[in-house]
Image (cartoon, rainbow over the protein chains, first blue to last red):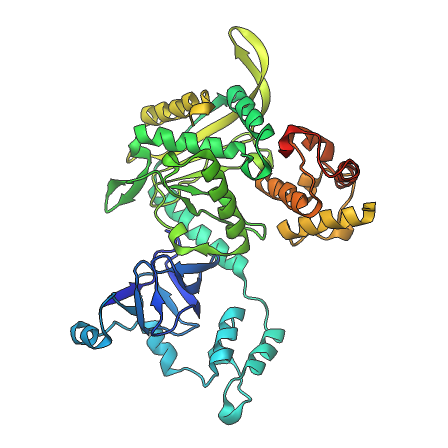
Length: 372
Length: 92
């Protein structure tokens, strides 16, 4: 028997509201399959299954809000029968909020409950006009017409406020910055894009991400998390990417194995991530476990960004606008495309000298773009 | 295709990327990326959407020629007339 728990939805999101089950008891599920949609303060998230198996029981109802880690479904392992599973299974701990929910659950049709959850309405507050006072789909739609929209912006601000306040309260930041010449990188990129079909066109940001990931291999103290009063290094180069949402706020989903991914694949993954972050269809596996975050604010025209570390991570790399600036090369003043890179890092884990060497490595890597 | 249809194609593509855009309020002679707050990823998606709907590939070197809505429409009109294929090496 597999107890399927609500997975981590990113360090700053500790609970989720079930919007929809995508599976039913008896369904076979595959690893990676989306089995539920969960709403968080920031966005609706597709929750993926981590095991092959068969759904035995769904333990929470649409509309229930449960903490991360709650067992939300029971799955049978391949070859297991419901009988054998029941004999060995311990009763699933029912989260308290669900208990409350079922105790005071209003009489409501399943379709109406689902719709109410989609609309962000509290089903227990609805007036029912169906037989025996049952809340019908029509009642929900009617309530939605008068109810104000749930304030997702406010929820988003609370979430960001909590994570960033914790960061500034707990993490002794130090900040470094270095201006990096990008003449070779930009020339390489221009040539690549001029001879590539449209879907293979690269953005400069992809080169920057790859350079950061490669540099992290030599500077592991910037890649990981601070847990239980100690530093836990990350096993891979999984980079959080800060993505601004058009309606306000931001999310930082994760690009995996960046150091081992080709620029073309990285570009494809990044563009899919940005698109899905903005349309609200990120997957649970894309939200947790980054060892560092990279933020690029260059499109907004600022020269540099000195960021706030996303806890429990221990560093954040920022890039400002890529633009032409005066530069001295071989004793001559010239015009050079440059970017100001910055590092915010946790002084409990690393020191300025180490961080400076890391930025130097990023700079060095960007001078040979063909090797990225 | 007439200018109005091309303009509508551009606005449709824009709306798919920035749903909050009000075409009525969009000045044709102001920098488009600034007006609509398009970052470089949004911009690339716009170029891709226009490639799908109009068959025109806009190479990077031409980005400066299409930085306002009016200029973008004019550019697309011209490329359409010349067979939909930009004479650039970017349209392999």
